[in-house]
Image 1: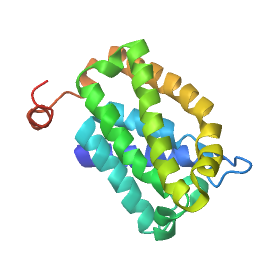
Image 2 (image 1 turned 90 degrees about the horizontal axis):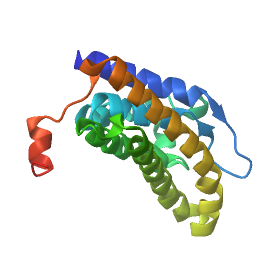
Image 3 (image 1 turned 135 degrees about the vertical axis):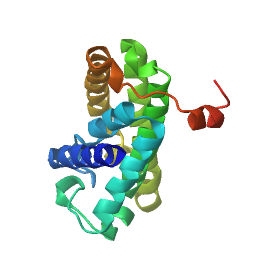
Length: 186
């Protein structure tokens, strides 16, 4: 069952990557990938969400055209979007951790948490881009154009996770004993 969940999660993120728009002056496209990332994390929980995004990166690294614009291969993992791609794993784990505690099931907190997850992706992408473009150029081309879109995708993703938690309560990720030990029992 978990393998199927991972495969479906990878497919959702890959489909989100197909809906991309070039941003003038930016080496990074605007896509629905980040919406897919936060929803997958919220649906699968911390560990399985992170594993799913790692599987997504592996799928792209071995040549499957799963990244934005149909990109694939190791070059995508070291090119301008590498920081964002790594940020996907961290964002999915963060949202999954929050979902295991029921925090994504409430509307305002859920949206704030998804906005925070989008910021994690953007800041990791910015840090990577800043190495080659400089901090201000990386901010102008790799973060600023994506703030509004990230907020809109966070609102939609939070509404979707809220709806799913109400409609299908058995699908809610729950904190595992291992996750409880990692978080110190909180």
